[in-house]
Image (spheres, chains in turn blue, green):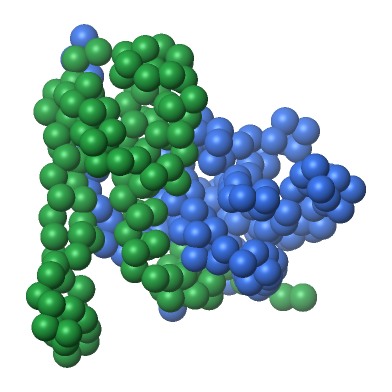
Length: 148
Length: 127
């Protein structure tokens, strides 16, 4: 059977208005993790890979579950997964439709528990932190999406 | 606290991702293209990693590595996999130039192009 595989062309500069984030909450939380990781260039590029994949595959992106997962316990919340050495980073996001346009909204970043940090972090506590942000998204979208 | 929305370009700028050394930058960009091509090919072909591994003549954990986006494949392994997928890879080379139009390499009299663009072209895959 002949398969129709699309041609992939190198994106000169990644830019998407589909993927947005909550500023400053997401930037502050992820930047702190990046700076403290000791692996900033590597983790940053892995993050960029997942952004691109999310932008290109949208609602289908969670099929690549090593990169993007759908949370079973928290309805409609997804998460970017970045695992590098001892780091186990999670970036929760939701798909949000405003004025008929859907966006992937990155909400925060945190370190998921692993064997050495078993009691330090968990999805549940992070979700409870970002719940008020999710509930106020309509108002945030009213102010538009800013770009540099 | 008042929140606002910023787009992906602004996200990368705030995270200072542009300051990443170009060798790391290139590695992950090329890895993205290769791993995504392999992953999407497998999913579109409706194959499990195990079935796909059999098709490629490798073990399932190797397929997992190939799809990871951070596995350092040898040039020969890339060619072996792509040949099995009836896919040809072309590398395009170009010099990185500064705002004055000078290559960082020509300043040192080494006029050697860097690999900065890769293109995967489908030849028509038979599964």
